[in-house]
Image (tube, rainbow, N blue to C red; front, side, top):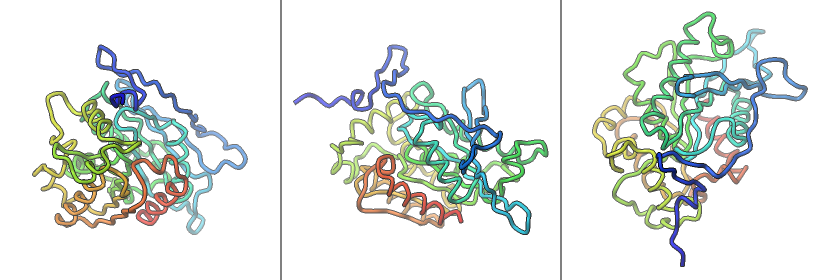
Length: 320
């Protein structure tokens, strides 16, 4: 039997300079721009540069039809989204991410800001948390500027800002939410955080990791490699970026998180850690809504539209 190769599984090749050659190409969808919409178009989207020196950018989504309240436009919740991809893959322009945010913007309805953060290993953690903080600060700047981006200044309700992430994106949300607790981000108020299948780990294997070690989509050698590519050099899997559960500083700040929605599936090797995270949050006084389903696996929403709809419904109920 041939030896399992996580690089082959992920369709990546590591170069001598430490960068990756990514062999999988994903279909892209351009933004619509903020001009006139085509007939039947339900959501508009546009791209904004975040930091040209880091090559980071945002894709902002808004519903074409805006709800009104006594002939005045009703302000919409603002959802800041961080995509999945195991730290190493995907962009907000990928068809799957674009369509996910289009549906979210339309159905909640909300202003959605999807953050195109830097990928590992070219950028190691905490670079992705820095990009997330940059995005929040960019929105804060628009909110405080009468001449700021009109999709933000005119349409968003700054008292209803939600941080939402999937897999590694949920890890980014958790660490960024803990980071901004001690920062003045007014006029923005984080009204809740949404962690969908958060990617967290640790040195000691959990029962679910051992039971699902040979999972077809997300086996342990792949999870190990993703952390090796993302974590700062010289750190191990018990570093707080990977294992927030074992860190006293994280635990101490956790109680200030406010409302939190955690979504997970029983066939995910990470399910034990995700449930432990929920327990830790509850113990620290966080108002947690946990939506765990025994059936399903890590990233199921990428291949099962019904699960994607179910996740969107959980998110909508939490926000609205």
